[in-house]
Length: 287
Image 1 (tube, rainbow, N blue to C red):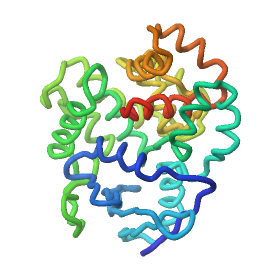
Image 2: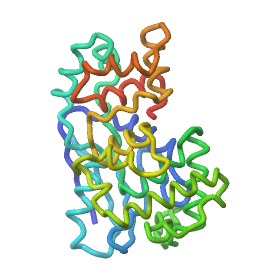
Image 3: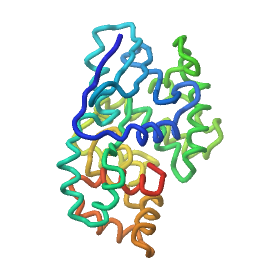
């Protein structure tokens, strides 16, 4: 099945593809030329999709999924994942009242904020990324997928598994993957929390950051990151992120503290998440 997903304004597809490529989990995601492919699960049914630029202001999706009734839900998730409904002109006009933002946006005017296919997956990946590099976190995610994911005969090279479900991870001994036991407990706890409260990772849900912070092992950086990419709170802002601090230091040419970054970001409300993506991308991290 083919889907055409339209969007407004500019779209920096190479930047989106770079972000996804740097975080592609072996066995679940591939990036080949200008195409991103991945496995997906929805209500216990599995499939996969590939997406690439289409004609005009659109992305072209090739979807392999056995339940046609799920297509509207899949399309909605894809629109969030690839940030297709963003009103970039309005967002950029607001951010560009800051001369620094104006300069950085002019360099990459089509930047979007990558979302996530699934809340559990994004939360697990965020926890795995605590205090380690993106590369190390993706390596751990690949081990988790291979050990606990569900095999999939996708017909696409490199896509062999679907991300594990919450009930599997809630009972798994994840510390055996090669991480501190406390982090393994956090991963299982996040999965159990989602089983206890299925609305926890629902985009737009009330009190998202506060509910995430109540979970064992979830600090402000993790909660803000999940809020931005999964809950789609576009004012979420992980002010303690070393990449954001470093990007502002490079742009301004002087040291910056987390408190100074947070104060500077007040002028970027209610679009601090887009400002974060602009800063991350300015130093090539995106992350």
